Length: 238
Image (cartoon, rainbow, N blue to C red; front, side):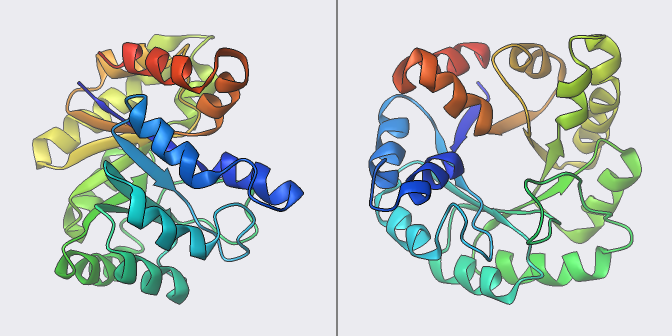
């Protein structure tokens, strides 16, 4: 079964919009695990507009499943945070502080030297590494040369075109996954995966280990409740 890691950034954003501690980020993380999620994902940004750096230390104390921290390793503060917290996995994402959300993968050829250096630092600390990439064979090959343990396929294009033509939407992802399997790189995926498109993706991507889902899952929880929503996502991954 593909593992489900719940991104709780939106819970922190909601809390921060009003001040105080409602909703309780730590309790939501505990509940996600209690309801069956196999991981918790966060993406702290320099402006702390949702996940605060203090949250990361607090979450480390209570997360009992896989703890995954996403972010841009160009930020010294991010690197120091990851090394201090030592999550199970760090996912390297090439976004800038001004971006609303992640919108592209790494150019693993152009940035290969930088990625090699930072991945080595994290792996020496015993942290599994994953690199956010577009579904492009050349980028998969470049990722292999960085020494990363995993890639995370950036799935926005799949999600955007799924309802138009799902076979066409997933084609490049199938090719990319085949290349990753051939090279011995494990596969994660994330961005705009939801209850409608998740099962088809899971059924067609060989070697898929984990999906990280936040916005759609938290939005669905407004209608179905968090426990029921996590159950629905887990069903799609069976």
